[in-house]
Length: 216
Figure 1 (tube, rainbow, N blue to C red):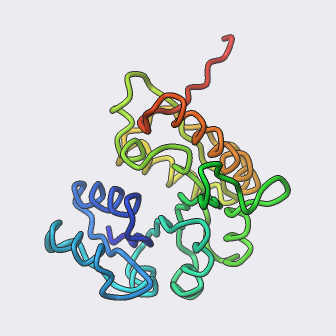
Figure 2 (figure 1 turned 135 degrees about the horizontal axis):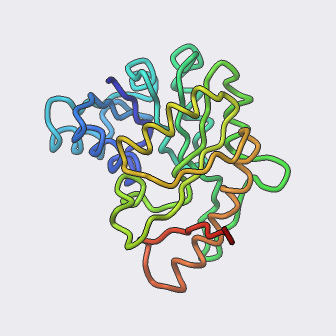
């Protein structure tokens, strides 16, 4: 499958490399076509790793991963182009974070979310929010953790969510996946990231996740 990955940071490179391991073709999109991290990544990964602009990657991909910083996601997606995203699944891993100080804050919260804003801006795109609650290396390999933990999906399109659940399960190895409901449930998982940050500082590790335990 041809997959577009928007964003050349750690998340984009980690997801892109995992997809290549699975035999997919991946184009990493950036603001500039010759983005140095994307060029270096493609050179290291080989012939099925490509790079280009956000527009190039969105046109190339049958499925798109948004791995851009939340503060620039909407701008990046506008550059990708609504026509190139139309009818496609957009897996949104971003968070609306302001990390300018040690005490992270959200730029969008409570009565809206970045996931919802993306869906409103691109109504003909099937936006599914997921993987934004874990560190990049856990996203693609939850078996790094000692126990099974949970990951969440939010989105309005039922078939798109079912496809993303299969991707999470079959490509990345997630076994515990909770469908939270419509794209408005992005609010909860985005707000959780502040707790994730506090936990990371408290336990001095980035490789962790939460597990939902019920009374039976």
